[in-house]
Image 1 (cartoon, rainbow, N blue to C red):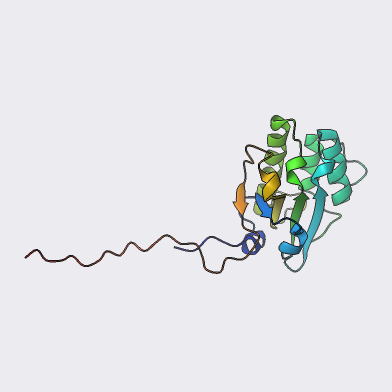
Image 2 (cartoon, rainbow, N blue to C red):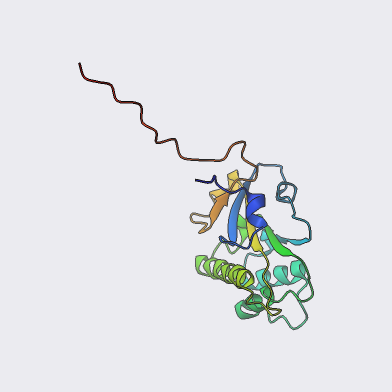
Amino acid sequence: MAGTPTLHTHLCNATPPWSALLVVPRETSASALVKTPPGFAVRTIQGKKCRTPSTLFSEFARALDFPDYFGHNWDALEECLVDFEWLPAKGYILLIHDADAVLPEDEEEYETLLEILSDAGEAWSKGQTAEGRRAPFHVCLTVTEQNKVKRTHWHVKEFSPTEPATPKTKPSLKRAPKRSKK
């Protein structure tokens, strides 16, 4: 059985999960922990600027340099996330810093965001993009251990920001030889 993939390995592949929680040590930048694969576009989104859907749309538009026609709504966000014509790259990584501040007062809107990010990752993995090409697309929701508790449910898989020293595997199931009864 293979060990748990590292974050870097996961980001290089067009495989789910498309969004992951990355708990970073205090005073450490997620950008410093995420090793950018060659040819990938990495964009940073400031979670503190995403407290409402309106401010979230503006921050995504700024970070990803969305075209002027971006409509600042959920449908337009989903459309732009699968059409990076203006941002050619081998793959895409979005780092959402201070993820605990993203839509903190509206769990339903937060779940809508996660659904759109998941749909975008799936579209990129299947070549269902505007250009019809496949590429890795991943989102790292970054948060400190201290701020992780600010959201009860993250609804995403958590990855370690560091490469494991040894792969995490289940203990061996080999049995000790049976002792004879005498």
